[in-house]
Image 1 (cartoon, rainbow, N blue to C red):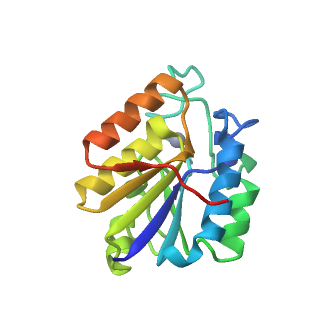
Image 2: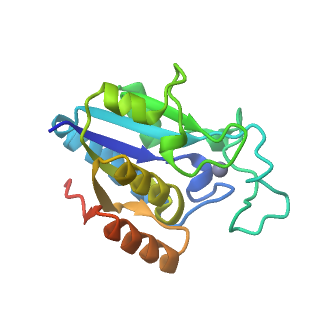
Length: 194
Ligand SMILES: [Zn+2]
């Protein structure tokens, strides 16, 4: 069994104080950092995705509907695009082995739309790492975590969603997303790092 951890979009704009801040995002970021450090030996591969927009007119609007369009967020070159510091530390200290980037010019909710530095899709990177099981966590449960976990299942990975390491935009849609992930064969489990 080769285990990967996928940390979805834990970026400044998606936590408290960001342009699309999710309540509980900072706490989830801190808990993910503890989890990664504590369970380092459980994962052969740890990858973080980031939303990273240059121009995505189908996705970003000055008059967003908060369903298909959103206020400007994670724009290339802005502080909001950066990982939350607790996560950036994991990148710097190489607890996170790879960063994949999505959404440059169009909406991209799933980390499976993201590319690594070489321009390789996450799926190919995971195959290269011979991963068969993926733990998923991050922001937001009802959008990018959901899309990433469902895509992981579509691509035949075993998937566990670490429910307490995810934060939702909205409680009701977050709950609905968890049900959907479960129905797609994802295991839902709380992480247990002290
Ligand atoms: Zn976006």
